[in-house]
Length: 284
Image (cartoon, rainbow, N blue to C red; front, side):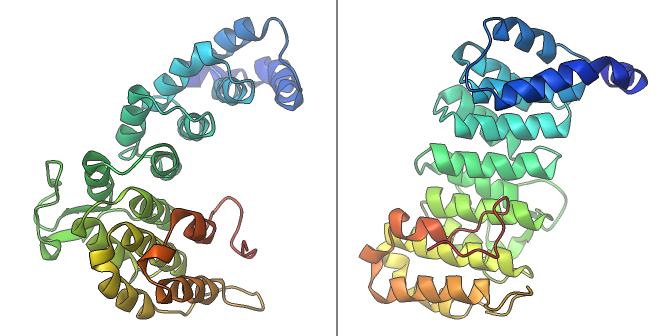
């Protein structure tokens, strides 16, 4: 209903949207920001609710952080609002149990940008844990027979019985990054090895960095990880004077040649690709 009201009366929100845009550029919040945020969060116009989510993050309004979690969890909310709520949670560094739960649930969101931001947010905010690894694996894979996913905190289903369920390449990129940060087991390694053979070179690059990252924590996997990275297809698209994918793989392999101790988050972190920043600029 609120979407219909907003659609039928778009002119009603122009002034408030212009005000919200000015506030997003402001250095300090106005005295009545709280009242504005409450009104805009209740607005039938998704654009105003979206602006309110951004402003909560912009001015770090701690009293309304729970509203971000609510926006992320509300599947009737506009997808872009849920997406920006997930991004705001990561930007604000909300390392709470409630934020963790909301981001894990968002891995199953129907909108791909929400799933991508949720995976990236978990990687940025939390430390490796079995339940997080399991949630990421469930986001990636489903059983070949039927439509049910595997259950439990551990992946005890052979990979031969699984199929890749995530169709969006940017989400697969984010899940590879998250497994690199949060993976704990052979199951995470096998998942990344599958992504290292992805049709998208962007996913393959992300998986190669993540495999090295994981091997730095699990040195028993290092010999196999190095072989896996060496076998990653280096071909990529792009009208640039160098191959980003090949450059990333070269960096990871040079680091791997120094042994597991060299595969640290600090050294590998800049080699994860960021879709929002573009990949025609290699970070040094």
